[in-house]
Length: 489
Image 1 (spheres, helix red, strand yellow):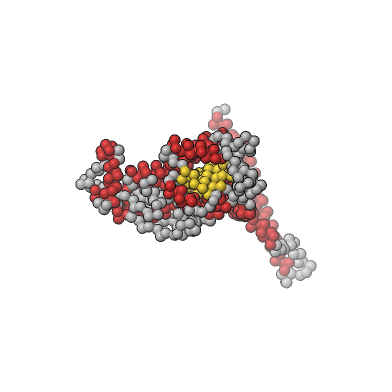
Image 2 (cartoon, rainbow, N blue to C red):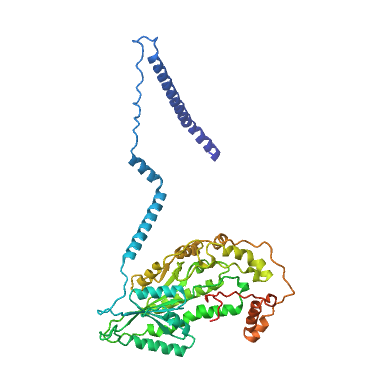
């Protein structure tokens, strides 16, 4: 028998099974239909008045109607929760975080923050602030630490700085003269300061002398930076910027490292490890917006330097804390100043055409010059409490964000797309660039390489004298209060 014959026989043998299945389906359908028709006839006859009672069939038995019971408020609430589990989870997390922050802030405000004193009331703990005495932050922090019971020393590089410190008229806020630009002289000053800490001092005459303890060294670099396109900043200004805002803080910490890494407590006295606090602005450096190259570059370099310093001092048991600052209200130390208008008219035509519109838009945005426009800023009390918590060991984090916008812009800089941030600041694409002008060739490269950068300084002087056509750069105008980043130090 061939394979075709076998396949034909299998088909014939399956026909009875298919007929049986189809006939069963038809019979079942017919039965259901007949039952339904019989039920309808019985129902009709049971309600017909012309049918005699003895012939009338009984009415069909129907299931009792479902009783509708109103649900309670609890059941309705439980049903809503089961249908919105994600939303409920978000609300619970938000409320929990807000409660935690509220309890923590409330407990922190009630915490007594006072420096240790001797039994006779004398001050025992010393804090060194390495920052310009003219900065509002230096003044505010030194006054607060002195009020809490510390002896505060402010590093002074010039006689004018010492006069500024003495003008505070506080007996426990003292100048510490250290010339950072002269390493041998700076080393001698550090040695004299160490000898001072190793000598017992009496708070009042005939009182028991006590040894002083160095609790912390606080580094406060300049917080004021100019905004301008990179193309309009003279190279000499970049050199001055890195010298005064980056190299000077690094050399200051370097000068104190021998003191920090040595045991200066006399024999028999309790040894305490001093802390190191490094302050940097964090709003601009978190998102690196356009036209903020000076601040973004310096703050990023200081942040990297702080991380390396932390890694080097951690094995020695010396904690380093990076305090990233937001916006604070300094109205009690500096009078409010109106925002200066954009000096785009002093730029060359090509630079004004390329950057002018975006520069003006960014200057009017919410974070112009590192400040959040329209908001007053956090209270300085928040910063003072954070600094004290770091000094007394309550705050152990390597990095602390404090101030309005510090945490928010850190999150935005870490997760938000750069293009979206620039668009929100008003940065738009320039449709057409200016034509290259062959009549004004660049004259500074050869001269700068031959004279060591003197050509750039001369060009800056020409721009200040009003001869803008003789310079390929333009000078940034200086501010009268001495906080301009381009001020020669």
